[in-house]
Length: 120
Image (cartoon, rainbow, N blue to C red; front, side, top):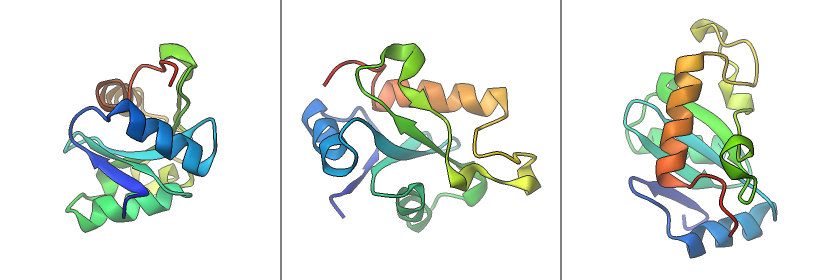
């Protein structure tokens, strides 16, 4: 599915722009596998990218959803909110990633693979 890309290395800027424009115009949804340090970007729902990662061998407990907003800089480009993040069994009772360590890992992987909020 070319509407969702699994990234193990930095996304080409043209691909990021295509996905942002394809779905929401100013942002793109993505899911990070914090154990494998890969992410799936694109789709209408975080669950779409989650399915792609699960099919590729990821474990549910390792997957965390967020939104990436290009042009917002490193402090504003990541919104760590997604329905798939609600996990009472992992003590995450909110759509936001509550564990500071997980949030920091998602941020590090996001910066490495999607960018630091640069303009498209």
